[in-house]
Amino acid sequence: MTEYDKNHDTRRSQAAIDRVRGLIGDNRLAIADRIAELYNHYIPLDRDLLLRDALMALVASVTTPITGKPDKRRIVAVCGRSGAGKTTAIMKHIGNLKAMSSYVDEDGVMIHPVIFMEAESPCTPRLLAIKGLEALGHTPQDRIRENEAWLLFRRLLKVHKVMWVVIDEAQNAIETANVRQATVIGDAFKSLTQMPQWPVRLILAGVPPLASFLARKQLYNRRTVVPFDSVDADGVVNVIASVVRTIVIEHAGMELRIPLDDAAYRNDDEDDTLTTQAYQFLKRLMHACDNEFGSVVQLVRAAVELAILADREYVTVDDFVKTYASFSGCKPSKNVFEAANWEDLDPSIALLRDEDKAWEEARLQSKGKRATKYGVRPQ
Ligand SMILES: Nc1ncnc2c1ncn2[C@@H]1O[C@H](COP(=O)(O)OP(=O)(O)OP(=O)(O)O)[C@@H](O)[C@H]1O
Ligand SMILES: [Mg+2]
Image (cartoon, rainbow, N blue to C red; front, side):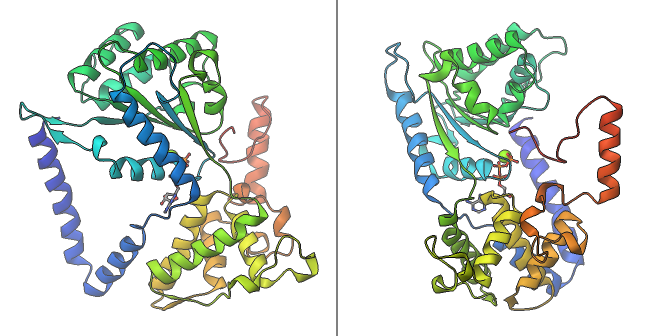
C-alpha cells in the first residue's frame, strides 16, 4: 500500500466514523467520548521499569559493534498468560522511545524502524517469514519457498532500514512446531539478530511456551525475558485496590462506593476472621480475572462504563456483578462476585453453562480428545 493509499484509507474510515457521530446525538456522543477517554490511560506497574530498561538496552545494542559474542540484548521476550497486558505494554513503551519512532530519511523516504507482526495460529516457519514480508508491505508470490521467504525478509529488513521486529503471539510459531521447524525458527531468530551489516533486534510477546523455547542453546545467551506474572499473591491486593481507585476516581472522575481504604482489608499476618468485605471484593475481582492484570483493568473499566451508561456518577459492587455476568454469560448462582463458593468457580469456564459444557465434553470425547478448559490457551 502506498502512502497515498494509506492516507486515503484513513480519511475514508474517519469519514465513516464521523457520519455515525453525526447521527447519534450530542448526549450519546458525550458518553461515547467519556468512555473512549477512559480507555486512553495506561497504568504502570513495577514490571514496566524492567521492560523499559530491556527495550533501552535493545536500542543501545544496535549502536554497539558486533563482536560475535552472544549478547543478552538481542532479543527481549515478554512472557505472560493471556490478559496479562503484554501487547499493551510493548506498544506503550515503543511509542515512548524516540529511537523507535518513524522518521523521514535523507532521501525523503518515511522510515518505520519498528515493524509489528503477529504469528498466526498455527504458524509454520514459512508462514512466519511471509507475515514478516507482509509487515514490510510486500506481497510475496504464492508459492514462495520457506528459505526464499526468509532470505527475502532478511534482505528487505535492511532495505527498509528496520531495526526492531516485534513478533506478537510468538508462541504460535513454536507451539505446534516439530523438531525441524523449532530448529528453523530458532536459527531464523538467531540469524536475524546477527546479520553482518544490519543488526536487527527482536521483541517477542507470548504465553509461557515462549520462555521455554527461548531457553534453548541457540537463543539462551541472546535473550532477556521480562516476566509478566499473574497477580495472585496476597500482597498484590493493595495494588489491585489502587488500580480500582485510579480507574474509577482519577480516570473516570467518579465516586467509588466500595470502601477500599487500606485499613479496610486485612494484612497477610492477620487471621482469617478479620477478612473484610473490601478484601473479599478485591480477591473476587482478581479471581474473576483469572489473576491477570490486564483483565482486571478491563473488568473495572467495563463496570465504570456501565455506571456511565446508567447516567450515574458513582460505581458500586453491583456494577461488577453485572459486568461479570455479561462478560461470562454465567448463571447468577455462578457469579464470582456473589456466590458463596466463588473460590471454587472457574472463571475461564464461567462462560459455558452446564449444557454447553456437556456438549463440549461429548464432542471432544467423540473425537478421542480430553476435554480442556474453554478458551484457555496452553500455558
Ligand atoms: N498497564 C495497563 N494499563 C492500562 N490498561 C491495560 C494495561 N495492561 C493491559 N491493559 C488492558 O488490558 C487488556 C488486555 O491486555 P493485553 O491485550 O495487552 O494482554 P496480553 O497479555 O497481550 O494478552 P494476550 O496474550 O491475550 O494477547 C487490554 O485491552 C488493555 O486495555
Ligand atoms: Mg497480546
